[in-house]
Image (tube, rainbow, N blue to C red; front, side, top):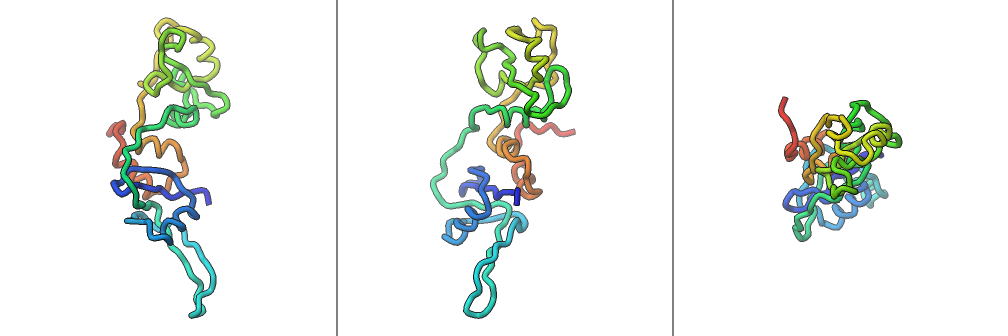
Length: 181
């Protein structure tokens, strides 16, 4: 199975995408405080003394015990940056495969630009080479979207594009950059 379980802390903040086996371990050890969402997986075990096969049902989302540590959005990676920008070059507007994209710094690093979400956009190699060490304005290019740092819920969505409907509903309710149409 490709889908994973969304693991939350007891306060409801995303902590990790975990495999079914990890969720089964947490549930069998009594570490799951609450769960939500529809059934994501049923795991079957051995035959019990009563002749029935044991089974463990796992929901799409689990909250586990432990200290609540406020997690910040992790640093930028190309994979999540490209997902944030929907694999589209934010200069020419064309969509590409990840292998044909690169990270562009709106304010070039050589000119003091930082390697942060708000200064990085997805760019095709041709546009990135054309822009070179210039700002978009100096190169005569216009950004098609404003770069932003995703919040933790947005980051977890972007990190795992195989999100189940219940997981998406939970995460999307906490998106900060959602524009109502």
